[in-house]
View 1 (tube, chains in turn orange, blue, brown):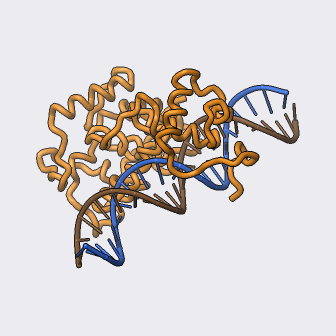
View 2 (cartoon, chains in turn orange, blue, brown; view 1 turned 60 degrees about the vertical axis):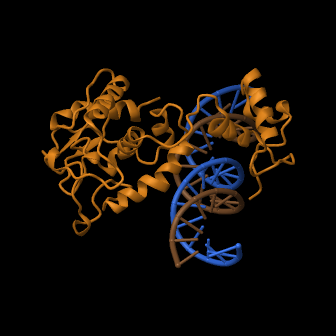
View 3 (tube, chains in turn blue, cyan, red; view 1 turned 60 degrees about the horizontal axis):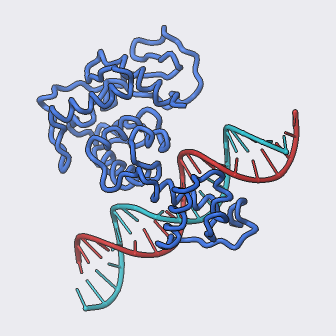
Length: 243
DNA sequence: AAGCAAGCCAACCGCGTATGA
DNA sequence: GTCATACGCGGTTGGCTTGCT
């Protein structure tokens, strides 16, 4: 390790930021904006590298940051988007105002991942790890009936005449109706068990969730039924093609 | 009360990409 | 078209906190 290219010529401080450093960075960026990050430390009078300043601002000092624990609604959004885009923390964070990619990543690794595993789910694929680990399907995870395959992130030629159990979106993303998959399994909502420490969303919350998603996806109402396919397409498009 | 382990989170590192000379 | 530099992102690590024995 020979340090960052942006600060290899300078003696830079590392480790935790002091309140004084925070204040300097905050004052400078609030006044001038960050401009070129590489010049921020010099102009702000900090002995840090630009990269470190950028990270500190984004993850901690930004005024629009939302502090505190994630709400169940945010958690659901993370799970849903992760199922589609995988470990694209920055993309996931874009759907959570006030949250950073680092925060989402940490939350995923420390909480959600473990919970999925405890539910017998592979946190990478969101599929059931094995039948022996199968547990009752919580309503919490039953947002859609489709599962993105790993190939979803690869360039594919759309093929609408594929087998009846899968579909390919206009953007080339393949959706499969997996039998060995939470999302593909059918169940009666009334039979949905209550997750330990994770109460199912109340109807009111579910409605709010739909509103939120519909805002993001151009008035497309999300639905947990098979007919929600259109939602997935829009959602995938907006997420994968965010930029 | 002390020691240990696990969890959590801030920060760092390296790589890929974008941009400008 | 090539190279250098800066930026953004995901993976990983280190240290602090908390809970348990």
